Length: 143
Image 1 (cartoon, rainbow, N blue to C red):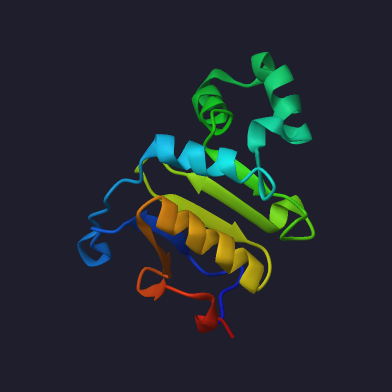
Image 2 (cartoon, helix red, strand yellow; image 1 turned 90 degrees about the vertical axis):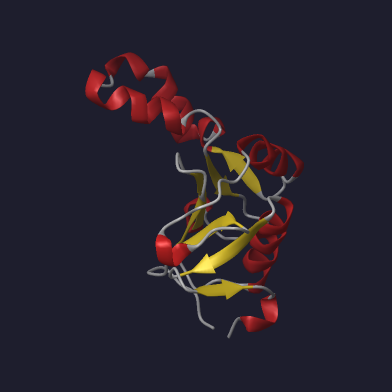
């Protein structure tokens, strides 16, 4: 299986039924724990230069956009470190309001990235789903 930039990648709870759009929520506190335990691989958006700049200038954000900006600055978005990718924007992981995890990658998924995402899914008692239908269960599935 090849996974790349245009693929829809999510982690959803084990009891989710994607056909009926029924998603079991991932525990938000467990999400935070996983990221905190894996700071070698991830950095919170609010701790990036961009996130710090946005926070310093929050008063300049229009009221209609402020809620969304503050949501992103509240332990919902992480960028990857250069331990697994070249550029921090090559792997961005977000905890969504519906309780699922959205994963954006800029390049073909490498085994190192798949390994940490599978660890994340396992820790969060979830499944790594590709394009709403395929499950990634081990790194050997990658081409």
